[in-house]
Amino acid sequence: MKSVPRLVVAAPSSGSGKTTVATGLMAAFAARGLAVSPHKVGPDYIDPGYHALATGRAGRNLDAYLCGPELVAPLFLHGARGCDLAVVEGVMGLYDGAAGEGELASTAHVAKLLRAPVVLVVDASSQSRSVAALVHGFASWDPQVRVGGVILNKVGSDRHEELLRQALDSAGVPVLGVLRRAPQVDTPSRHLGLVPVAERRTDAVDAVAAMAAQVGQGCDLEALLALARSAGGLSCAPWEAPVTAAGRREVVAVAGGPAFTFSYAEHTELLTAAGAEVVTFDPLRDEQLPSGTAGLVVGGGFPEVYAGELSANEPLRRAVAELALGGAPVAAECAGLLYLCRELDGAPMCGVLDATARMTERLTLGYRDAVAVGDSVLAVAGTRMRGHEFHRTVVEPGAGAAPAWGVRAPVRRVEGFVQQGVHASYLHTHWASEPGVARRFVERCRTS
Image 1 (cartoon, rainbow, N blue to C red):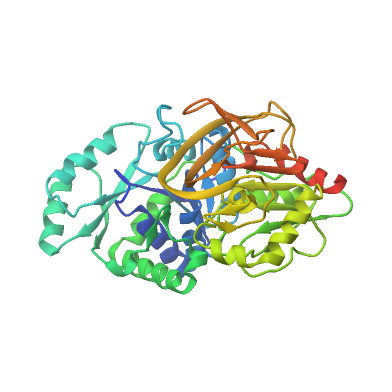
Image 2 (spheres, rainbow, N blue to C red):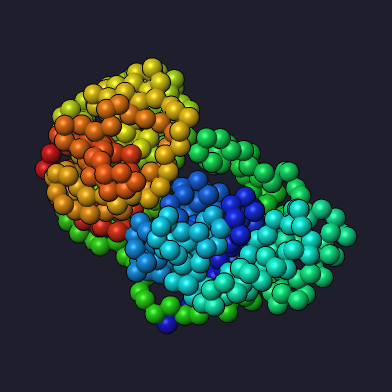
């Protein structure tokens, strides 16, 4: 039985302060000299960037929908290997999961899979005695979810705190922290959530330091650490990227920098294990692909924010087009799909795909069940994967003559593009759920 001290930071709803508390706890414990493993429930890419800044370790996602419940604990142990403590930030409200799927992929579901105690962060700004009913309801809703403490956020005054504490005396859940309103820890948001760390590095460092100070002063860190140490053991083995490398390593260029910040840490590990030399480049600044590039991965991010700068880097756009048109493997997700189009909001892009992209007011959001329509550099026809869409853009047409995926919900449709070695789609997928994806991609790099 493997035991890593761990806490799940949850809330009754979004906007309660989970990210502030979770990131602040990570940074506060790291400042004490503990090796802290940061995790995020769900598919979100942005919060893990702040977690990484707080801990000095890669922020990792735990998504029971994308990867399946059976991989949650192994992926957790993989990320937490050698750590003194793990802090897991939840998603939405404690019991909110994949739409129409019950508890699947909810914070409560992940907490149960990890046998981890939950700390409930409550926005107390507009309540006093009612907080007891709220906490009691969340703590008693599912007997398998152990709510081990509450942190009161946005408390207005000493008197307000006194009223809240009196009310919670009868709820049977200890108060482990009280945080006052502190605008200096706020992080700016825009159309898809928080602004990523890579786009505001100095300000992000200051924000994380402010979170650590606020949480360190307002929370009982010793009690929280004792709660984390009460977590039960896990009987599974840590996840490992299957090693299939042999002979010469192929250079796989992975887009990074401020415009392409969305990536799961396991993707690089899977590519490396499959025999790739992963080299990151910045499409905003680098005018050429890394030397010897045999394959290209362009993940998610915000190309719409940087469309002018991406377009102005004509040498790199030309290099990407030449690589793709030469048949090299190219995997593009969401932002990568936009970058491969002819244009984005009127700005010329790489022109690999005969499609245009533009911003819209409509948010497309949700999990998707997908099946590969035909063979590609990522999968053979019929391969089933689960994905996630999150964007305010539209690509016209939405699918090429050879689509990437058939999607079942919310309506049956095909989407994405497969042409020569290119696989481009709006769907974000987690390759740990299907390790053959990375292996197939690297094999194609060797033979293309």
